[in-house]
Image (tube, rainbow, N blue to C red):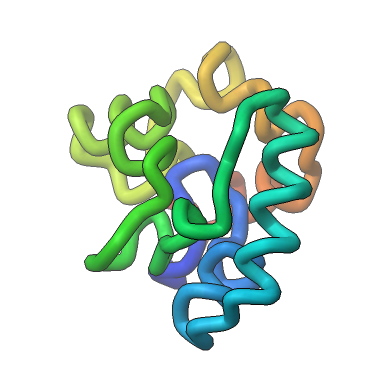
Length: 114
């Protein structure tokens, strides 16, 4: 499976936080921080926007590193992604992502997610 596919099926390769990190793009960090602050109704500063990807070694966005229940669960169960979990379609944790993002669900259901 593509290492840039997160445990939840999102594509880290196209994530603006990862792009800002690998390109050391402070303008993009500021843009992402503003968007994520508004979306999540919390203060996120440009300095917080550093992530190499959910399943890639390296720095992680603070939420992804320590608070993401999806990432924690998949790692504890030693699944490559949630696509390997027989409970994926009934899981409340990943349900919020795959219920609103058909592409993420498709990635997890495909042979690449197993």
